[in-house]
Amino acid sequence: MLFPGLFPENAERRARVRMVIDREHYDLVVREAIESAKISVWIATANLKSLMVEAPIGTRARVRGRYVSILDTFEGLIARGVEIRVLHATPPSRPLREELRRRRPLTVNPRFRMRACPRVHLKMIAVDGRLLYLGSANFTGAGLGAKGEGRRNFEMGVLTDDDVMLDVAQARFERIWRGAECAGCKLRTVCAKPIDRLK
Image: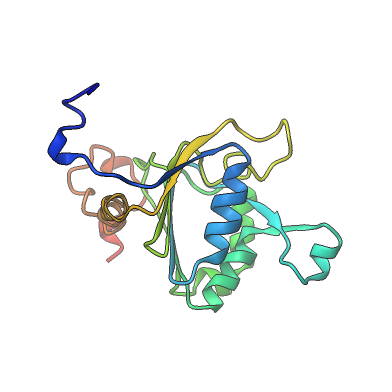
């Protein structure tokens, strides 16, 4: 076996994993996974920007080939009882900040929460505690393949429904989300709002 120290026999296990490359981020992660969420969507990203998606089927905007903000998707999910958490490092882009200001009913809804931590560099999306994306893509149009040919990033990641990987990833997310890392963080003095002060 190659790299036996990394994969000791007693730690080996099989997991279903699918590679996700470039435009597949939009098709598989955004359209199939996020839009079909029934319980929760947890997003961790270093950068957070406006993301445009195809208008929902059956709408006039869809007939006209228009794209709408991912915040429309979030509002629809929240109306169905889905909890959305967004953990991000840098402030949202200016267009997204302005859009969030215009959507006060969304931003004050307890099912939609955002938290900033300057040390977040992981890119993760967990849907319903059943599907996990881990990869290089930030939550941006270019990162998640929503831009046209020649404008999207070269990205790669994996999708899995493996319960152990989900448990580990969600536990890591939750630890950061609740501020368990704040006390020992060397960036605390420059952090605008340490998470552990949000309680």
